[in-house]
Length: 160
Image 1: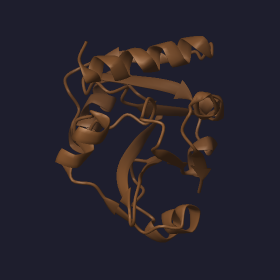
Image 2 (image 1 turned 180 degrees about the vertical axis):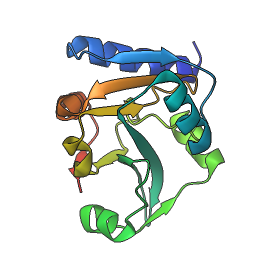
Image 3 (image 1 turned 30 degrees about the horizontal axis):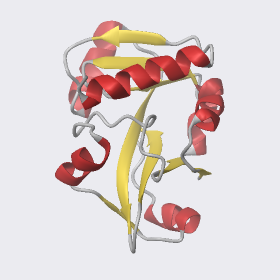
């Protein structure tokens, strides 16, 4: 089983174990926001598109910022939560560390030493869309269930 399939299967098991009512779509690979918006329109998605930014923390360590697709990296906010200055990791380093492809970073199923920083604005939406590793699959989960998903993970979760 390749790494993207492992991430996908982890996400399916996670949501099923938590009895989360999720939706799943298969489509052409989404690796950029333009394709994401076009497919969203074609398939009638109404949820909030999430964005997962894989970050390197100055000194040591990594983190993933989970936010909405229109938000920019809040470096000061990340530093306030982690105590370290963040920078966006190169595509090559990201793929090596977490196995995801650029443009389709999955927020769940990361190595446990990677902190997850959650933009609490995501909790205000009704539904969150994200890629479960495979760029040709999208999951939608109720935003109200996001804390349950995060609590099930072994990663440290920081709210921002």
